[in-house]
Image (tube, rainbow, N blue to C red; front, top):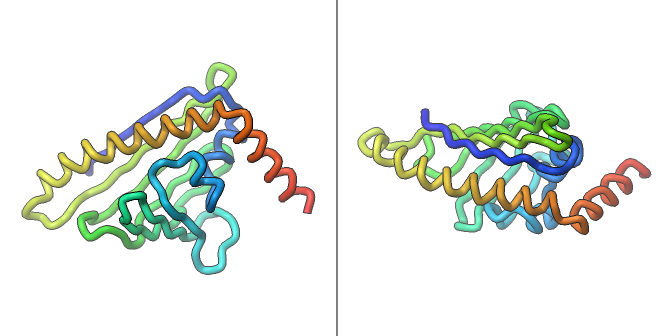
Length: 164
């Protein structure tokens, strides 16, 4: 299966970088160029192993994903439950490790395409497209991590949650 990968050194602690990466709703739209909407499903209020989300990309593609791992502040893994017809399967993993006073963020997407007749070509095109997309997405994330106002807003939200 093809895999695309991107990484950045983030000048934030792993806890804050991880928390920012896992934001949802309107806050997520402030930094994530890939999505136009994202929400938890089945009454879930927060992320966790087994929790499902519905994501709509800015191109209008819809995907339901399930967290297969959720280990703050180190990693998160998701797999596609349902999504665009051309994906036979799709999974993503985001890892955050302490590095040089900040955080090394490594994001990966693994996928396979269908139908079988066009799979080799579709996977080459998919690798190129998803490779560009994951780079754009992690770059936007890195910029968001440098946005002091956005990080302050995230920390204020986290404080509000723990205060209630």
